[in-house]
Length: 260
Image (cartoon, rainbow, N blue to C red; front, side, top):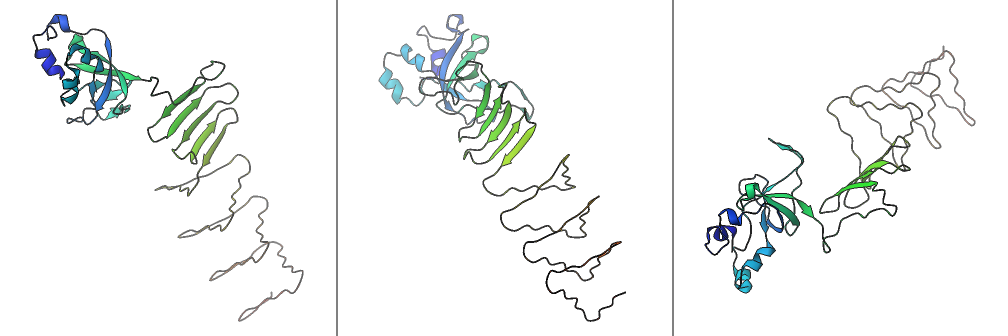
């Protein structure tokens, strides 16, 4: 039996003042596909089964004791903005009714229970250092407010890809199990107050579509444990003092070789 039929009935559970609900009730989400795209849900009220003598007939009725489309309360909402966290079907929720009218339900929030337990547990000392958001597929946004290791972490469902900010050490780590791409329509600038290291287990390629430059204020060293090749349509090596040394044979070749 739907609330429409209950409100219009004359069996002592109708729409007059006696049958308004001014408190809150528990319900189960049954539908989240709002035809008007207003972020509303439909909620089933199991406790309404107590109002029916024939509960078997009620189970067979597709128009069960569900609510009208219920708006979902959010901590921020506005025109094309706000915090969008919709409950899932079968989630237990807490429902209130505007002015007590059962045709104006509002979902105040979701509830955990013995079957649907929280994704995190309270730490042993009860300091309540952890704040977390867990999505259905397993993505996590975790705030750690502990004194010894305060941090912010974003982890995907695999657990292999993450962004971690460690406040105590002023450190940020991006860990990716696959490829990492950085793209910008304009300029990309990377600077470090101390040393900067770039290393790879295989091949390193640095390329530019126009010109390229590598410079250092004091010294610049380019070395290879194997072969080092410098090539170009025109290659120039300049310096106040230029030395070419070879521990073995040193060869200088060209179509025409000029020295001084």
